[in-house]
Image (cartoon, rainbow, N blue to C red; front, side):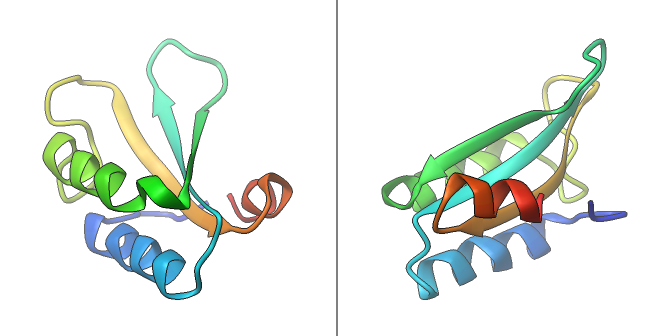
Length: 88
């Protein structure tokens, strides 16, 4: 897990996923009140639209702009679900 992930680092990861034609991008999200993080995996066709959503909904430190207690703590890409899971 990244110690202090940032929006600019996440953008780089999404751009790398596109460059390497990865099948999936993923984010790991911590939410207050939940024991385990949520993992969201999107297919490559959604990379651009998901990144635009994250840019609008999250601050530079990846805390949610409109919901306290929600924060992206890691992000990754890969060609299989297992590969993404291992890198998160």
